[in-house]
Image (cartoon, rainbow, N blue to C red):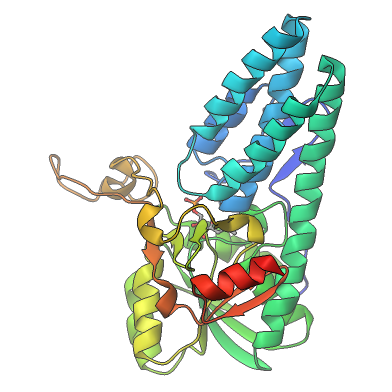
Length: 352
Ligand SMILES: CSC[C@@H](O)[C@@H](O)C(=O)COP(=O)(O)O
């Protein structure tokens, strides 16, 4: 019997940030404690924490830690602001694709600009980071409700990467829709793509579903096409790292291929994401920067003692791809659903 738990990837203590080390899951549940902004920046770069909304929340706390550090070093207001700007720039340089990082840092920057004293800025930054965290969980629950309404009483859902509690402040986006559907009493089975090369599906999504007793099958990425052709999958739900004005959506590498397969087989393809994942400053997915990650992620199968390719093998490792909006049945947000998304509909949605 499924029981939804309150899994959280981070805990703010007031003067440090505790992060569940996602590199170690599912074999070990270890927390690391960040007491300074550089630790937070490295945690994002090294994938201690990952997932678009989670990166935004954690970066916001990074700014708070940075502000506290600088406030201990200088009493000069202008000096404080200049140093804090460098810290925000450092956090912004950690990962390029997920726009939630820049969205959260922009909010923090606005507070720095509006503040009149160092003490006021530090206090306001902390309040804002806590708000961003709490709102993210509320947002995900709303996405879940809107998404669950789209699903029938019985679904076999294919999902990719990890879009769950671990990728957000809690509950999840695409996995939040699955949680909400289960909570609504629907009969849900999940097919979890392992998500090569970083294995977020096998390690993290399977771990979350297992804890909650939601039935799932773990599959390798190349099994998805055949399972769709065999009629086993009733819909695909994925998350997003950045959605352009026309609805083109960057998400974990492999998402584009799933969208093509879903279209070919007439299977609904849903993207679940908060409105903070939209980047209305870019008109299409062509403008989304795609992170290229280290070759070792492809050369080794997760841990460094399991090399799977010959020495000298050349590697490509784009971490994300872009799904054209024409392949997306609907984008599910906390403010409602955008069916068959395109520029006109997205503009209209945000106007409202
Ligand atoms: C709610 S998470 C949505 C996306 O961030 C997720 O699907 C994804 O692509 C995560 O990539 P990652 O490289 O693990 O940060």
